[in-house]
Image (cartoon, rainbow, N blue to C red; front, side, top):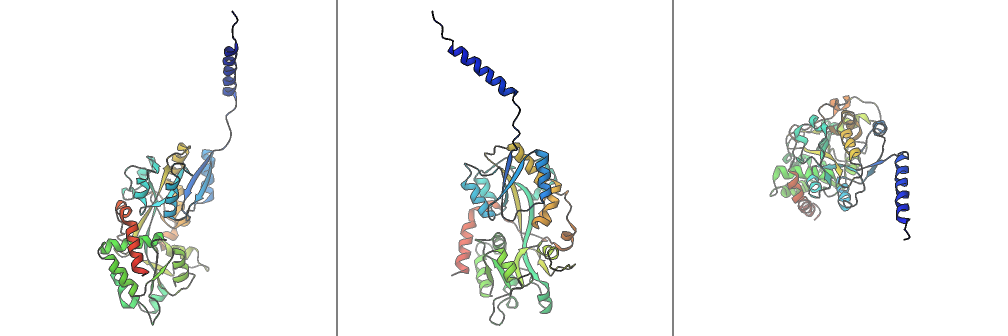
Length: 358
């Protein structure tokens, strides 16, 4: 009987191929770790290079707009994620990110060095990286030259001395909460203070007192605000408690005194916390975990203040001298439950818009 040796030959060739593949040298191609961030993200290049050299990886940062735009992009692409790690979702958007199940759990050993007050996700999917206080900043020279007392409560902003002067706009410029993260933070501070039943009445009164609304932080701070380079008409602006430190560091002429300061009285500031998470679907889980550890580690955390003018969450990180001298933190910062924000954010913004632009 004639035998068919073809199947036997195929098996032999297959075994030889597998043996040769096992003996072949491993691929030397460097993997790429993609990190999606908001537009304000910054880190020292030498720190990134150290991470890349240590872990034999190329890190690519993909800016995706502000915190809201960043989150929207991650949600729209979550079935085919465009990155391995996402940084920049803050506590005003945290619940939405968690409800969309964007992240995988990761218990970083660095969490032991982070105070519990910043750990807003008990499921350890979104890990805190930094924080900052959104407060009213003021032009020190203006208030001194006009012998004007500082407002110490939100209600104080309704006083006539902070309102329209000789037919001009009032002394305060704020950002639109629909298009600005600090603008939203300040809106939340007013909701915390006056409640859902009273915050719109406050904003109507503030509008009647001449408040100016800018589209974003850059316009408010660098165009309208009199205390910064724009030398605008408003001596008060919604900004960050760390902004005075930036004024010293980036001053055109060396100075040891900030031209601005923050009003940090109780109830006047809203605390923002920013998070990092590993996106579901990553093909580089181990590298992503190592990058999260890198962001929570002391070297990165000590780099954060002068790169993004926010505070590190790692209690072992030391602040630079400019921060200890000129940056401020709120005495009793306001926060709202992220779930409450997520359930009402759009409704609150729409109601605010109807009051301010009708």
